[in-house]
Amino acid sequence: MRQGRGISQKPICGAGRGGCGFLGKAAGNWGKLPDMSTSFSGPRLPDFPLVADPVDPVDALLRKARARHEAGALAEAEPLYQAVLGRAPDHAETLHLLGVLKAQQGAFPLAVALIGRAIALAPDRAEFHNNIVPALMRLGRLPEAEAHVRKALALRPDFPSALNNLGTILLERHAAAEAEAAFRRALGLEPALLEARLGLGRALAGLGRAAEAEQALRAVLGERPRWPDALYALGRLLVQADRLVEAEPVLRLVLGEAPAHAEALTALGLVFAERGRPAEAEPLLREALRLQPGNPLFSCNLGQLLLSMGLWAEGWALTEARTRLAGAPPLPAFPCPPWRGEPLAGKSLLIWPEQGHGDMIQFCRYIPWLKAQGAARISVCCAPPLAPLLRGLEGLDGLYEQREGRQDLPAHDYWTLPLSLPGLTGALPERLPYLAADPGRTAAWAARLAALPAHRRKVGLAWKGSPLYGNDRFRSLPDLAPLAPLWSVPGLAFVSLQKGAGEDQAQTPPAAQPLLALGAEARDFADMAALIAGLDLVITVDTAIAHLAGALGKPCWVMLPARGTDWRWLRGHAATPWYPGVMSLFRQEPGESWEEVAQRLAAALRRCG
Image 1 (tube, rainbow, N blue to C red):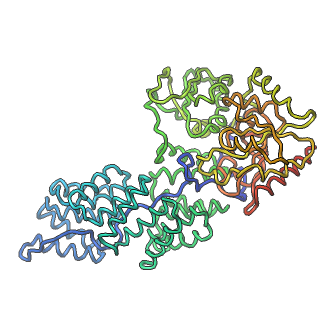
Image 2 (tube, rainbow, N blue to C red; image 1 turned 90 degrees about the vertical axis):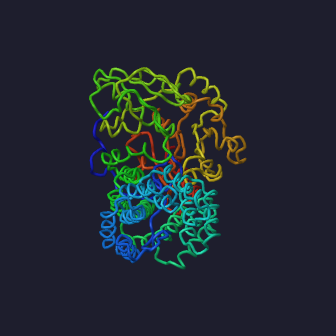
Image 3 (tube, rainbow, N blue to C red; image 1 turned 30 degrees about the vertical axis):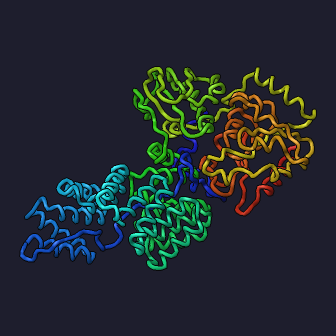
């Protein structure tokens, strides 16, 4: 094994063709488009009744301040508001309007504090509750924002702006159907409310009604052509519809109008990354993170890009933000501190599971390495299907199956997550195999494989992954038909490794594509490992099967999609440093069909004799 390879800031591979997995939609797939944030759009103030008293000097100052505010002269309005508060520190209307101004300037904590004081002084003012909402949302305080907007609607049920804000909050909560209803109620009260028309377009997009959403968004842009939020919503819709070429100029228009629009910077950066232009993507993603340094999504998107480019040290550090992503599984309240790379000599370490089974299989390679560094005890908690496979892993002292609810585990000095290990160790252990199949199970599966014609090379096939994976629409094949060229190679016998998705297809393959369907009978990953041990080669799409074959040291050919290729496969290379000498990568070219990839696989099989 070695330390440090691929961990420096110099790339270990050049930029290649295909994507890098940034536009997935599942929670486990970090690289996602940010949703559009709420904001105050322009100098027109929210609804606020002001009764003028021309002889009151406070009122005169406030009228002058509001006039400058409505004219967009925020720098002139602010000292006037401050002058009012100098005379009347508890003037609720002025606290509210100054809070709105500070929100427009991006000073969201101060905006919340000011409008919060106004609410404390006048709790029955619906507009106060409504206008604190955008600032709370920008600070990520969604439950508080929802409570305030619902209070505003309780005070004034026919409040279009509050209904619009409620719809925006519901979109953030992925409740698109409820959001649509809120936006339609707002428009029923105020048909010309562009913010609600924009929100309706976004809700329709969230419901998968792309054509209606596009029509709604383009209608909004017809009335306000250079509105950054509407342009961003359209660009985001085009990206989600895989219309990246069309999305690029739309997102450029956003940045032309609002160069500091962090969401648009990220979206355009991800479009560049997906289209194989990482050098153009990187500065955009860095700028978005500079503008919002605490944003975990921006951190992870940049981290994934850097990992795909082989810039591992910074990439691993940035992707540590993944545990703070919206929708990330909550971590238990561990009674010990997280491991930050301290010496482990004489110490114990618990590795807690995250994301998919393939991640645990890929990164459990670090356990023997950590033991060699002097760790006294290493324990793993894992999903039950993985436990029999990991039980015999060298260096593993304790193995616990993850259960629902509270889980009592022995005390440890530290805990960590599998994907944190490369960055914390600065190492890439290369010894293969690091997992082994159980001899008894291997013998049992060998008996089943004996049903295949003798003297033929046995090739395991996995053509589908879990449909819950964000990039499954690109990585999985529709059925066995695209792999038909493989059956033209003489001397081969095929075995299905499909379990779950694709099992039915394996049971009834095309007549010209006979195969032995065994994958569905595997009880767990130890069974699958034993089945793979009896094969000569595995051909698979990007699933846990690829990592299992690689960890076993079994020759494995991985079919990678042109769109959304995962960061761990880097860019452009036909091999991977994670499984040197045993794994080959067959990358789908842009515009290439899976059948054409299979034709290249068939040619490679013929060359292998």
